[in-house]
Amino acid sequence: MVDRSDLKTQNANKIYLSSPHMSDEGYEQAYIKEAFDTNWIAPLGTNVNEFERELSAKIGARHAAALSSGTAAIHLALKAVGVGTGDIVFCPSLTFAATANPIIYQNATPVFIDSDEETWNISPIALERAFQKYEGRVKAVIVVHLYGLSADLDKIIALCNKYNTPLIEDAAESLGTLYKGKYTGTFGQYGIFSFNGNKIITTSGGGMLVGNDPGYSEDRIAKVKFWATQSRDSARWYQHSELGYNYRMSNVVAGIGRGQLKVLDKRIEKKKYIFEFYKRKLAMLSDIEFMPIQDWNDPNYWLTCIKLTGLIKPKDIIFALEKNNIESRHIWKPMNFQPYYDGYDFITQCEIGSVSESIFENGICLPSDTKMSDDDLDRIVKIIKNLWGSI
Image (cartoon, rainbow, N blue to C red):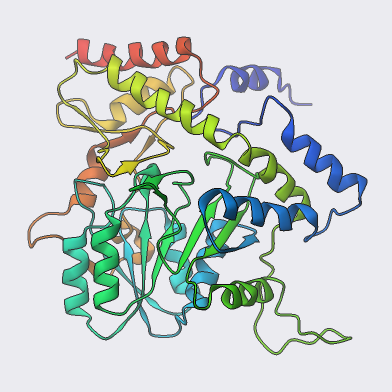
């Protein structure tokens, strides 16, 4: 028999990048207990319906569908705007693979777009260059609000309107982020959220698709729910006239989400505190640049990210923290450098250089777990500062 006591002790003392944080009040357990008491364990039920309603009310969305993951939400958003075989979809290169993969699910073709230094998100300049290159052939644009930072939405929306192209917001990392006073995920035809274990609130695994177009979002979200439940027709027997998916969120998981939603503002407050703590304590290190916060952006600070401009490299910090049982991570590796996506087009801001490549090569995500104490943060800062003392 394997002795796991050392492993348990190690994990108990570990500082994570961003781990699940249940409410002190026990909101989640109350909703889960209700699901058990009423025997609504299987998909659908009060928790699913109320989670959709409560999230919509929180962010000002019109309609919502609770799904099994953020990836499922992106997939069905693409399907809802009519993306199919051979269509072109613009997607930021600097993102997680889950943003791009659903484009392939629909047998469409991704074209990857560079980032800008001002937001670390999709570059409006590169986006316009892409529209000019593929004019008349683009079926959708996916914009990502990376690490809780809002993209420059006014410019992006103007381009989408100019070229009559639907906008899908991947707000998986930006629940609670405001762009000019309005929540991200509510600007495009569709917005998607993720409740994966590392997100600002979690359901252990799950996602949400919200619809915001006043003309047809109610019908489209109803259609999404139909697709997500295996496209089961209204008949006395199991009948399927369309391809369906097993994408609905379970009633138990939705109960966790309802409880987590009650502490979203607290989590954002703590994430901001962590960002400002690092910024204050590391201010004397001139070759560190913090992720850019614009005047029009009130982010959720999901992860505190920095860019290094001197001799110290991301791997140096990652290895130093790792030796002390502390988790950190590289910035997302751009899609145009991923082996699977090799050969797909990539549009930069200018002819020479790639902003997304520079951010990846020089960027690092610092530990941003909301359960960290000031002592934990001081310990992390000390380890980082010691690296500068060694050069």
